[in-house]
Length: 596
Image (cartoon, rainbow, N blue to C red; front, side, top):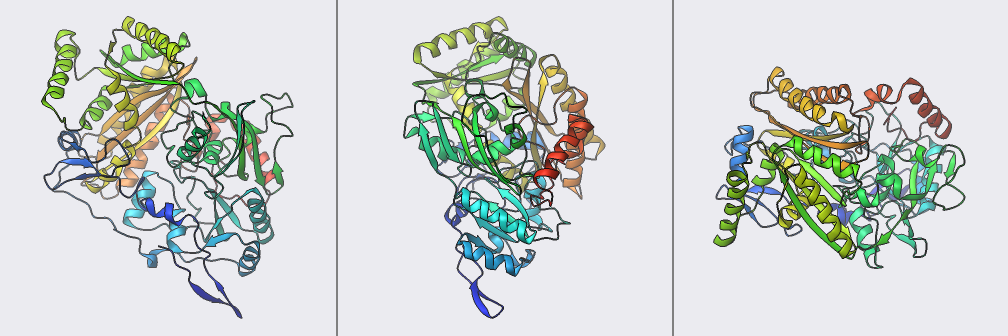
């Protein structure tokens, strides 16, 4: 994709590009959609849905009911297909404007860089709906002018010093999975914008087996971190839905949460030490200890700072031995209310498994539509028996029931005891054990669901997810009111087809839970679907806040949600954040305009 090209600079000829060290990985990924190029949902020649590639368990399998579900849910048709650009037209890309003196100083550092159009566009966005829509239909008005690839902490120090010297704007880039517009370049930014890609800072620097900690460079992506730690018999257990592509530094910068946080904790529970490069210098503590009482914790200025203060370069995190035993499970409940009550009791007794997630009926139907074609008559017969038992014998209404998926990890004997405790609680709330296969399938679907949006866009269906945290006593009201608000707003905004409005409870705490919403609609007949979508999402966020929910649980704020920051943390709280920004970065070198 990328070749060395030479252009004249003054009296000397210098390479415009130093070869992109991340080119092979970049070529594996879609330039205008989610995930790997070889992995996607398609309709084959027979009109059946299938998932391509061999990276996921669903790969190569036919999904016999998915087409019918899409047609029934959205009013979509294979006859109505949109067209999007197959490849990037470099002539549409804004030109790279880079200070020549900065380029000369950068070359002297021997740090890899590129002004290639594809490299710059790849790092100009995250994965919000409007960003992907722009890639399919047009082009961003402002993108990075240059991409740099530091390979270590010292390289980052050099880049930040050069940015301060030449008054440039730096936007840190990790895995590119942001869903808060955090990576979009401010259109009004006149300075050279440098995308600082941390992907080459991907080493585990050391593992301390006595203290169960590891020092890791911030650019490593989740799946690589777990793979490398596993070679030494350890894991972090931090598994956000985006772990295949998101980076350790990104987790820190957004205060991330993982699917198995019940055992391993959220990112703030895992972090022992952070090293960050700012325009004022390096921020870090003087020792690596489990806790300090030395005033406000400076880590909490860094975690959630979203690239506004500096670049996280190294993180020391807690690790644990790889669990000896892992077991999946699932429970079907007669309705969502019973399911939520069960999760509340599990949280109250502090016996939550590594992961426990409850999906509402609409999401259950969605997951059922993704069930692959059954290979044997016997398996089909067993599925029929299970359905008969649940719906006819036990009297569960298939249009109301909901399902919780479970994952237990740890010592085998303790896992089996834990499993019995959770299932005993579920029984008290009318829950029926629904098997390991459903639990494992539900857990694995997490990694392929993000690919569905790209298929939807091909057939006039746009969709997005968003999340919140909420006290237990408001969970049911919030879920009901937000879903109803989405349906009402769609109707008022002229959406001609009924939308999908669904939710799941994904993480549980003593005092509340995280709730994750999906919504999507068929936009045929709407001239500006992204504007309509953004109006509806804004209304949904207002409804969340009105019902006692938080602005975000783990996605962060970025530019997408910062209009509600004052309401969320108070005027004085926002002023405190501004004061930190003004001291650490007085010239706004880290000028992505997130949060503030």
